[in-house]
Structures are given as C-alpha cells and as structure tokens.
Length: 262
Length: 241
Image (cartoon, rainbow over all chains, first blue to last red; front, side, top):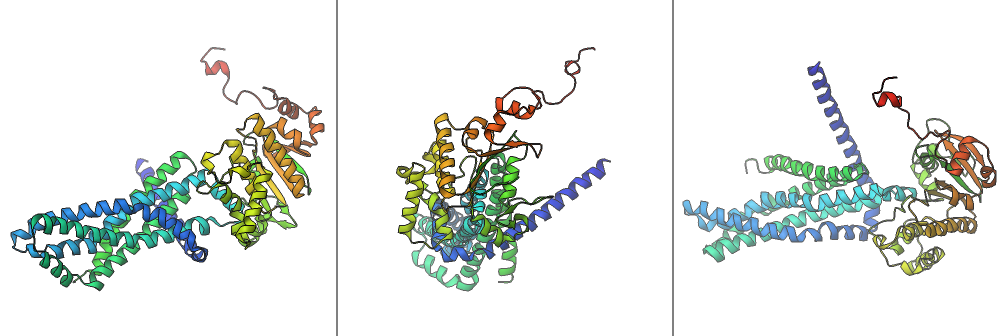
C-alpha cells in the first residue's frame, strides 16, 4: 500500500506541475496579448523600468566589478603558467560576455527585481488591489503585469551588458593596473578575439531569454500567490529558486546550441 | 432579492453566510451554479469579458479595507478610473478629483500616500474613488469594519448622501446593525446562503422572529448557538455518565 500511495503522490505532483506550467503559459500569452496598452502608454513601462532596472544598478555594478577582478586574478595565475599573460583581456572579456555577464546579471536580477515584483503583486492581491482594479473594469494583466513584463525584458540585456562592461573594467584594474600586464595587448587582443555576432550578440540573446523567463516567473508567482503573508513569502522564495534553476538550465541549452563547434 | 433604483439596501448576516459571495456574483466575479443576477436588463453570468467590463463601468465598489493602490497618491487613486476609461484632459480630471475629494472631506489630503492615511481616511478616499465615474450601482463590503465611532458615522452619512446625490442604487454588506439601520431603506437578513428575513429598519426592529431578534439585539444565544457543535461536554472531559 505504501508503494501505491507513493506512486499516487508522485503522480499527483507531476499532474500539478504540468497544470501549473499550462497556467503559466496561458498567463504569458495573455500578457503578450494585452501588451498593446503598455506601448500606447509608454510612461507605465518607464515607471517600471526605474524600479526593476535603475534600482538594480548598484548590485549589478558592484557584483560585476568584483567578478571581473576575480577573473583577472584567477586568469592571470592560469595564463602565467603557459606564458600567455597577454591574453588576459581575451579571457576576461569572453568569460563575461558569453557566460558570466548574462548568467550572473540574470541571477542577481531574479534575486533583486524578480522577488520584488512577486512580493509587490502578491501583496496587491492580498490587499484586494487587484480585485478593486477588476471591479473598475481595468484588466490587471494589461495594467499591472504587461508594463512590468516589458520593463524586465528591456532592462535585463542592458544590465547584463553593464555587468560585462564593469567586469572587464575590474579585470583591467587587477590585470593591468595592479599586476602589470601590458595594456596594449590587454585591449588589442580582446578587440581581435571578441566577435560581435558570435560572442556579443549571443550574450545579448541569452540575457533577453533570461529576462523573459525571470520576469514571467516573478509575475506569475505574484499573481498566483495565495493572498496571505505565508502565501506571498512562499511565492517570493519560489520566484528566486525557480528563476535561478531556469537560468542555469537554459544557459546550458543555449550555450550548447550557440557555441557548438565554435 | 431586488434592489430598486435609488434605494440603499443592506444585506446582513453572520460571518460566512454568503454576503460577500453575493456581492461577487453581482459584480460578475463569480458565476452562479443556479439562478442568475440581472442588472440593467443584462444577466451578468451570460456576458462576455467585454460586456462584463462595460457593465462594471456602471458599478462602484468599496472594499472592506479600501484597497487603495499603495503606489499612487490619494489624487492618483481617485483619478485612476478617469484616466483609464475617459479621454478627459488633465485639467478637467483635476477639477473632478477635487470635487470628489471635497465630497468626502479630504481635499487637503490629495498629495498623501495611502500609507499615511488612517483607516477612516483610507475608507473615505476609497469611497471618492468608487464614485469617480458616477456609477449607477454602488456596492459596499463591510464599510464600517474596524472604524472608530466618529469615522463610522462619517462613512454612514457619506454613503447615504452620495447615494441620494448620484440617484444610484447602493448595496451594503455589513455586520454593523446599529449603524446600518440608521441609513438604509431596506434590509435582507441571510443565513446559510438563504434569505431568512427582510423588511424596513422599523419592521426589523419590531420583528419577533427569533433570528432577527437575536441579531438586532446582539444576544449571545438563540437560533445561532453560542457553542459550536461538538461531542457531549461530559464526554469531552472524560467523565462517566
């Protein structure tokens, strides 16, 4: 009997998960359908760009700087063994533009902006603000969700680009200013090795996908949160956990597609 | 139940008897499994999304704790529906918002945020927001809950005056028998999802029905028992018969 109840519990969880993915997909498509209003009233998106993008700047800049500095240190130690210290710029830039920039920025974005979005919408639901909006004949997906979605999608690639740029600067500070790698070879090798389409554009595509996924997860969790303190806190946790796992999984899939044989 | 035009009608009953559910049916937020809600000649649950939203533009609702948008000022809360549903110029919206806020006595609070308001003030701002587009039907979900006696009287008086000024129909869902009997035209009593009594405030005060008598006079025991059903008391204490 224990086996039967275990199988039943697993089945129940699988069905619930599939059901939830279906509801989230429907939510995503509804967000796209009702996005027209957001673009007609672009100030709604700009307001959200401030709270999701601008308010994430500090954490992105500080984290980017330290990640770049660590890359500079570790990269130098490794490259020195092969007498290739001059390729430090290439290593730092490719590491950041291809991988660390989009991934780290997305993880930080999920923790800061994603959790804030979930908590805000969850609390709006708990305090009947969403019901009030519906009773005023205003579609909450069009008015609340869509502007936040587009703000997330727009800010994510910009934050990832900023993370990479600041990270490269951090690598420069450690590699060139502190350790003394030749400045000319640091920049010139980077310029020669980093390809705009293969490296930069693929990084931008990654961050765009992460932006869509993280924002949809954050908004859906908030909108679907039980209207209680416990419900909102659980939804906020789920946003960070699910987004982080989705980012890492999608990063592997996209890297395998983009850089296969490159 | 019937809610004639221009009347202020209360729906009363114990917690969990279905009052708020009834409001949700009237607002089209729920679909009935039996029966129907007809408003302005339209059956609510048969309307499509556009029809439902068109009907909701004729309604206003005051939520239990105001449900003000916390990221907007008092002014923006009241202006919200005007900006969403009309193409009125901003200076005209300003005049209308000031008139609505003046009606609830909070013209001077226009720049405050909801977090800076007391419970009574928040309820008044929510009232100004609910009547922003002069609805034909106003619904109030527990408008007196958690208010001090002065705020209760203010809200009750505003509900009556706004109903008369707008020529609207108002439905109040409430537990507060004394405050609501002062202002309403008619009362429905509900218990377990059905109407158990109805009448004007005077008829209900004079009613000899046990349930109404217990409710109006706030008696501890009666048709609504004090003790929740459970096992025999002696059995619960593990005593022998």
